[in-house]
Image 1 (cartoon, rainbow, N blue to C red):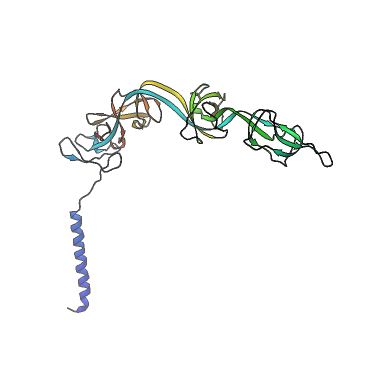
Image 2: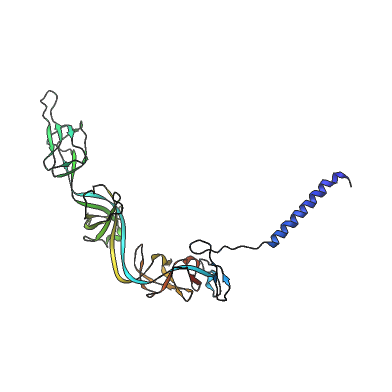
Length: 333
């Protein structure tokens, strides 16, 4: 054999050897399936009806394997249906404003020579600005601008050097004895809020503090552009450091139910226009259509469909269907 054929023969043998190795590896490989619990962590195998170890599994759909007895068992978190009270709340944002605000005007036209600073406490009738009404060649006689009420200067509208007339506002003064929060209520909640409705206010400037409030006035009509209604809430409590213009987060009680059947809101599943929950009965998930009453971020009132003491699934609904075998996560019963 001539040497020039040796490289080709060696290359052919190498390819055949590599192909045989790949085929052996493919025949030896087995598929691996990861099972997860509702929390996303690796699942702990649990015993099935025959006593053998079964991994956690399931599917969010009609083809879920957990829907058959003897199939996979899914770990879920549950909560018990209990009697309690529930308040439906509207979460809104607004701004603090003074109940009474007036502006100070000069008695004559001229040029502003001086003003007080914003934040100055003033008495009714005290001088808050001066205007020079004189013209070139005439006698200098500054004219005082007086406060129309006692309070605090919340805004200096014009600075010294500006020319004004008797109809030009120079200073804005507010009384801080009474403060409101002004908010806009969406149309869908407007009918549930009226004068006297209670609320709770949290100000960004005072995190952790809650100020009680009550609706004192509301616009009689809905704004056709924003589809909302303006309401005023009177703040109460210690308002010594609260100032107009502060940002407010408002929680308004829309309605309240007492001694109602309550479950966690996250346990409710909606399919089209139907609301339902999964109730655990002897290790099997049963789908129950329910009628909702009030609901809030903390819970949902159930008018029909389940009874007191029923265990409802609050986490893991996407892994099960009616008839799925389930086990309750440790410490969640």
